Image 1 (spheres, rainbow, N blue to C red):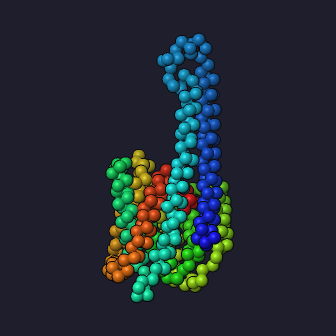
Image 2 (image 1 turned 180 degrees about the vertical axis):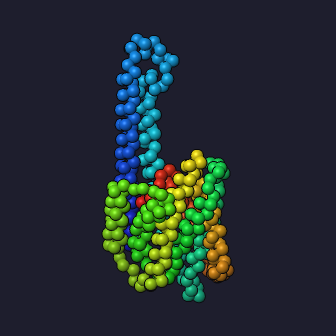
Length: 344
């Protein structure tokens, strides 16, 4: 079997297990909440202790909470099921798109042109990727509507940090870091995301959540270390860039947590395409300015003109990113940045 097929199956199995654990936790919390609600309802119902004939005679005029518990149970159950279902939709969509994303990213930087040169313009690639995401996010906003009074400044910091994390990963691959090693390093990004959420986002986590993160990272590391080793050497510069990427992942997680908290304080809940459009808009601006300042924008356009065959790989890469980010921001909007990081 081809190595990438084995890698895909192993990764899929691991992520599926993580998703099932997450769904189980969400379902457990929902059942606990439903149990507390039912107990409270029964207690209040018993304290009222209306005569049976009075309840029957006045049932039509009683509020929903006094006219019986079946309606309440049905409504509560449907709401409880929404959490696990949303998690499954988000995780399935993310993995469905990004299953191919990583391989395409490696293919772009392993591409060799007719003159023997490789594609090295990581920031220019981020311009193209972010532009595709802005287009898809904008179309999503036209469909679902834009949320007003959202904290734009928070999106600016989150977007600049996120494009930096992605660019540093691309630079690591472009500077000799093998894909398996990059995957192993990024599998531990839950740690910087958790630290960033604690420091920047004011989050709190239980001992159980710390242990779950440690178990997931350990399992991913075992799978990654069991893969076939790359023949290329891992340069010190490539390792430095992947470490910078992890640091920026922590900043992204912290500010996304803070963004949701600040929005909640003013009674605003950004929708998935709000996250996608505004985050990627600032990612695009940041990548464009950096690539233009470094001269990558001009050299990147020149490289594409000389090697048009690479455009097919970049187009697939950008499309996979846009589809995957739709589900990423769906998960962030409905859950927590750490939950999204656990899935990815």
